[in-house]
Image 1 (tube, rainbow, N blue to C red):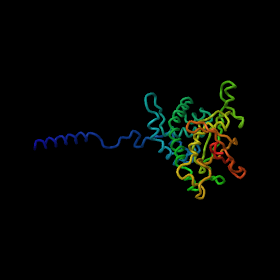
Image 2 (cartoon, rainbow, N blue to C red):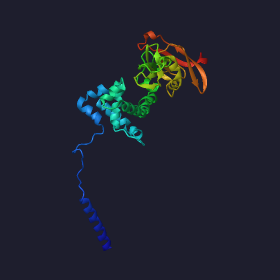
Image 3 (cartoon, rainbow, N blue to C red):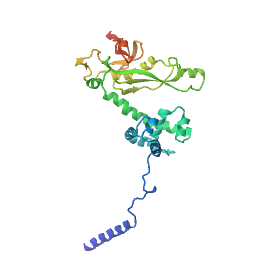
Image 4 (tube, rainbow, N blue to C red):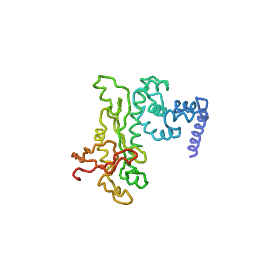
Length: 310
């Protein structure tokens, strides 16, 4: 037994001798300073100050940090991974670049020059990053708001449209101007909006009374009518206007008179909607229930009920 103990002590002494060969001091290649994980963002923060970041991104440094904390794990899993050439720009810097591009990008070459990058490479990096970032942000901040802010919650917190308390959200089609597309006249005119007299894209947005967006459609060409865009997204409205749980009790503890659907404020004035339920096509009608002259938002107040209900 004494020989075994002596052997263990000898091994322990050998380990201690090996450890003594190496320094326990931290090795820093940069002279003791931490290497920044976002040199581009930090450089702008140092040169422009905290007030300079909102001018580029619409986010204060603190809000930018919060946003990065939300998306960093998602980005780490899906961006700049796999085989192939990797980007030499950090993920945090790319978030800063993308937010700057979304706010200021008139043409790619201008913003690319700001960050001292080649235009083609810059455009590819931004679009690749957006392809990864967009689905996560939409689920986190748009779809989650639709689930959280049901009609009952809006009513309990007194966050409703003043003139139309039965309406869950307001819907409108927005227009974003673009450059004149290349191609033949027949191709160009599809992007021309007769309403705005400009070339561009249209998207449908639905916004709650508290200002949170709960839906943004895919873009449509500028020539597409607002009404056609609304009808194309009617499945979303059918699902999100359907009452759940205690949604019937909305105003002053009384049951709503709008049947199985809550109301929606819409901008267009056509009175017919084409909805589809359980695979069968049904025609729904939009009933004007109040004068719009008293509504400061200018929206039509409508309720959707099956045609056979009239």
